[in-house]
Each structure stands twice: as C-alpha cells, then as structure tokens.
Length: 380
Image 1 (cartoon, helix red, strand yellow):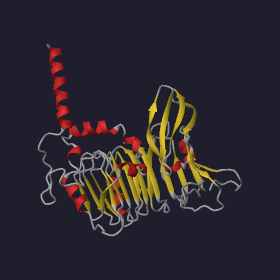
Image 2: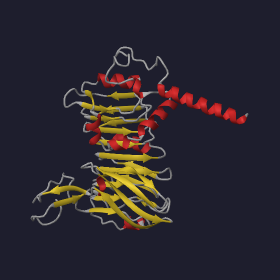
Image 3: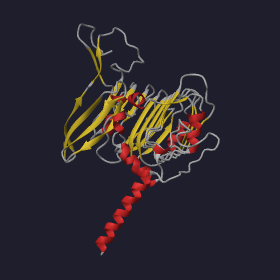
Image 4: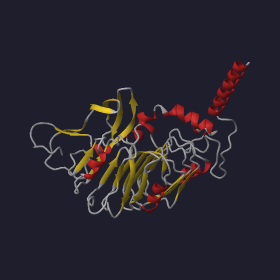
C-alpha cells in the first residue's frame, strides 16, 4: 500500500493529490491559504503559501495529512484509492508549467496539476501522437493561465476520471470522451456547451459532480450512472436523467431548478437519496421526485459527509442563498418536495403560486425602501 517494506512500523499513506477537493482560499498581502478536503477519507487540510510581489518563496501543508495509517499489507487492491499510486505525476510548479507538461513521461497513468500558470493565457494541454495512451486519471485542479484544453478519445483513449476546476472565459475546452466514467467540474466561467455534448455521449458515466456550472439544462443518458451532484448551479432550470439505477441525487443551492425529469426509472435496487438543501424546486420537479418509485429524503448530515462538496462548505451559503432567492422572488423553505401536504399541493394539480410573498422577498423590499429613504434624506 505505501510502497515500503512490510515491517513492524506503521503503514502511512498521504492523501492522493488527484482526489483532493478544493474548499476555497484566503488571501493576504504576503501569503494565501488554500483549503482542501480529501475525496477518500474526508479529512481537511490546507496549504500555506508565502508569496511577495507574485513570487512564491515557500509552501507547506498543515492539518491532517495522513489518509491511511495502519498495518502493512503484502497486497493491496488496485481499486483501493488509499495507496501510493504507480505511474502518477503531480505538477505544482507555476512559473514553467508548460515545460513540465511537455516533459511528462509517456507511460503516465495519473496526471495532476495543482497550480496554474503565473502568466495569463499561456498554457496549452493538447495531447498528440502516442504520448498519453495509458492516461486513466486527469486532474486539472486549476485552469488558471490555460489557453486550451483539448481532450478526445483518440489521444486519451484510456481516460476515465476527469477533474476540471476554475475555468476562465479565456480558456477554450473541447471534450470528446464517450468512455469517461467520473466527471468533476467546479467554478466554470463561460459557455458550457462542451459539457452538455460530453454528457450526451457518455453512456458509461458513473458519477457526475458540478459546482457553479453555468448551464441551463443538463441531460444524462447512462445505465451505469449512480450519483449526480449539482451544487450552486444557479442557471440550471432543467435536469433530465435517463439513469434507471441512480442512487444519489444532490441539487443543493440550485435556485431556479424548475424541472427534474426521470426517463425509464427502475423500481428495483436501493433507494434514490435526494438532497435539496437550500434549493428552490419548481412544481414539476417536486411532483416528479415524489412520483419516482425509489426516491427518499437524504439524511443531510450523513449524505453531506460523503459528498464531493463537504458539509462545512455550506456554512456561509445559507445567507447568500436567501439573498439570491429574494432577487428571484423565490423561497426554498416554503415547499418541500417529499411532502405534498406540507406545502398545500396535490399530485394532481401542482402549482407554484404562493399565497403570500416569501419572507426573504419582504426583507429585501424593506431593505431597499430603507436605502431609498436614506438617499432621500441625504438629498434634502
């Protein structure tokens, strides 16, 4: 597991770089801290970077840095993520990232980029020839400074796990990967047409997770799909799932999700756990969720603990979510999808009309009226 001799010492494995999840960052004049959570064990840690005038002098990781600690084992399953991965390359150099990408060994199976380029719009990732035929996992944890990311089934035929984070509008992304199995997207600026076209052909997709993805509709078609997570996708209005054996659906903090449609849902298998924390679901979405033969309300604490977006990252979002719903004239607290009687609806005649204005909207209107009065007093 750890790549060392089996003796009386402890077997210790650090968090896999390609499976760590971004939790945000804090900045100061001379340093910044990047917060992470391990996608395997859920432990939280951070990277402290000292930098003055854009020059990085040192960096170190602080917190729980061990993913596994136990007894040595003579054999370890290849599918076990808590191990030292062979043929894995992690790039964390910012000033010469393009040169390091060009020098990656041809037999690499796991490629991780943790830092972007310091020069804006300077890096291109376009595999060609026979370089990355064995690449199974690609984790670009920041696309800052990237100009082009071009991935297709010819140049990376073995790619199954893909992570793309912090895409800017200046970065052009092309994805033609029908063989993809796990897709993780976060903080996406600009159009998302390449994501929609990818989902249309990803018939073997197993897990999908997206945060802050500017797509109005997402359509899935995969019998292998088990988990779908869309978090803070404020533009998302329609979610169509042709995934008969789906087991987890998370639509947390989606404020405009009017329609969730299930095509060919299966009544066999385990329950479909649905989490809608801080979300507004339209009448059609709620009705279709109740009509699904296996849908149940997910336990918020337990489900969030295993989610790709940890529960702690939601702590600051409730207040911003109320403001966003107020601007949209919507309140997620008025109607719960799992109980038709609690929100005064029936499965026959579902309506989105509110008997009274949501509290968040009233608070917003009172605040704007107060600001207008203060402005008027100042003008006099």
